[in-house]
Amino acid sequence: MTTQQIIEAVHRLSSDELKRLAREIMQVEASRREPALSKQETELIKRISAAPSPEKLARYRELWKKSKAGELTDEQQHECVQLSDWIEEVHAERMVCVAELARLRGAGMSETMSQLGIKHWAD
Image (cartoon, rainbow, N blue to C red; front, side, top):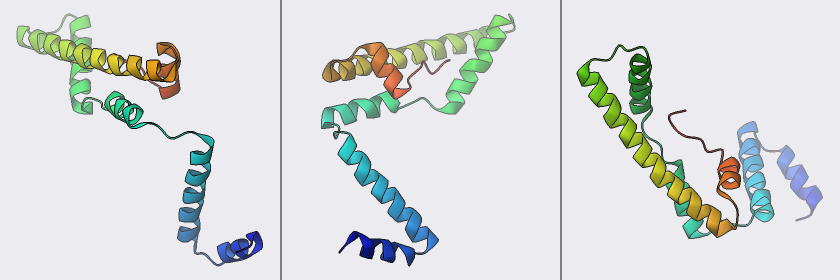
């Protein structure tokens, strides 16, 4: 098929088919520009991207604000500490994965975090 024949065929596509084709063309083009991730990099990025539930983070933020205002009950204080400890533990595990990904790429932690748009969940 020539390029001209392809273009003529594209003109006959419905809007939905054209959008699907455009997405697929962009994926092919991107795969040619960027090297594929190794299985190890893919797994690390998956682990880095896993986040706590929005509800849990919202609860932590709510309790943290009350704590700053001195308005927590003893029970809420205990819950806030537990959530804070859990968030820090998960974040530490996440940073171990970032460090490993940075090592694999021969890059620094800051550079890798910036590339991935990573920040602390509690922020």
